Amino acid sequence: MATLKSNRTRMFLVATLALGVQGCASMSKNECVTADWYAIGYETGIRGEREAKITDYRKACADHGVTPDLARFMAGRDAGLERFCEPRNGYRLGRAGTGYAGVCPPRAEGEFLAAYNAGRELYDVQQNINRLDRRISAKQTDLKSLNEDIADKQGELIRVGTTPPRRALLLSQMLELQDRVKSVEADIYDARVDRDRERARLSRLQRRDPAW
Image 1 (spheres, one colour):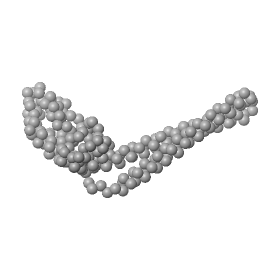
Image 2 (cartoon, one colour):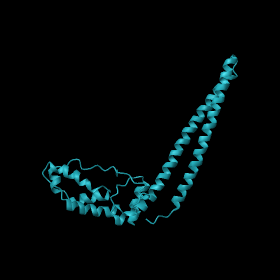
Image 3 (cartoon, one colour):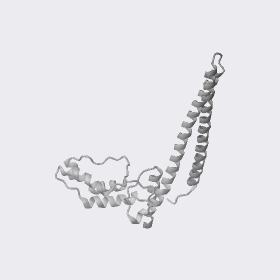
């Protein structure tokens, strides 16, 4: 399964994992002395954080003359990674659009990445649909504004007292606006076609029965 660590299977990976968990910016001397480094390592692993996280704890405790127990930390982190690297968790992270820092050991990474990428594909398709929804909404707003502008000019065009030169200008402006209307309508049509295609793709993906 380690062969899945190719560029193709890593297409959705990002450089860092951000789960909103703050690092240990400061620790009291008592916290450093009494710390359960296995438990801290386990939490680091289950969050999918790199082993370099121990550097934060070293810096935090250095002022108190305390050195973290690296062996206990790493043993705990390895245990935490066993849970983090389960395919089901990979699928959940990918589905949520969460990044992956490449922390899983080779024996587990193949299945983890397969699940992660399957979930991430769903996430990406949904993001495409959301983007197209926003695009269509924006274009519809533009279209409404253009049509209102055309209606205003039509009203002025037939108004008593509008001079011939002004009417000529209004007609020219209306033709330009109508061209823009056609362009915007074409954009809306294309976006709807794209959205329908992405919706169909999403439906197919959702019907898949993941093995995780």
